[in-house]
Image (cartoon, rainbow, N blue to C red; front, side, top):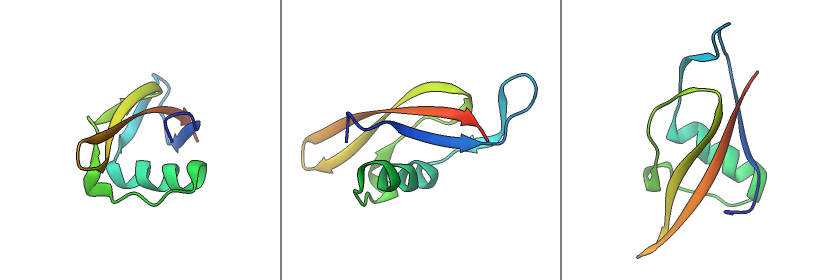
Length: 76
């Protein structure tokens, strides 16, 4: 999952800022599409993403096992 390219498409203004933000629910759906893994959105630690580019999220997989996932946010 850490190696899979996770891409989230979002509506973006002319300055590169998102209309709203990327949520844990959006990220869970992107992980399922890219890696084929169902992740409970409550296990995703994600700061509010409000700009395009690369961002990092932590996903609790089991007990003390945490995956660092790189998320690329692009304009839709």
